[in-house]
Image 1 (spheres, one colour):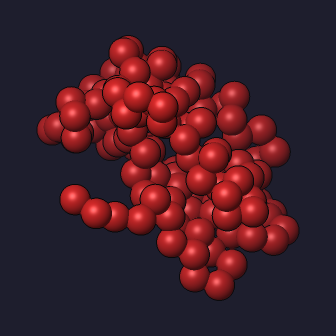
Image 2 (image 1 turned 135 degrees about the vertical axis):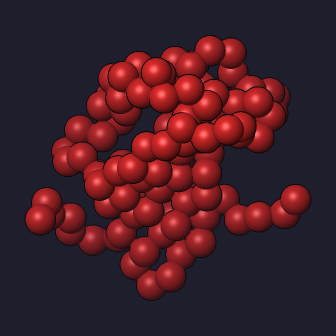
Length: 116
């Protein structure tokens, strides 16, 4: 399946769902903590390539194979989003690709970001 890691329209960057895949090996990290960290690191690299950072993210969607992992993922999430917290939705889903435990997608905007 071919897809873009991100698409930019004017100042808006849409980042595709990111699994906790190690970019060097293509293998899924083991455990919810490791997958959440890797997913967010992968998003960070995509944002960097687009000339923005975590502080430019305005919306995320977190997909979990088990909603009971929400608190664990939330604690890790706070390590990456420090200047402001993006709007966010979190859902439990029946299954994720590669039997992943978490997938995160993001929308970022180049330029100044303010909380509403």
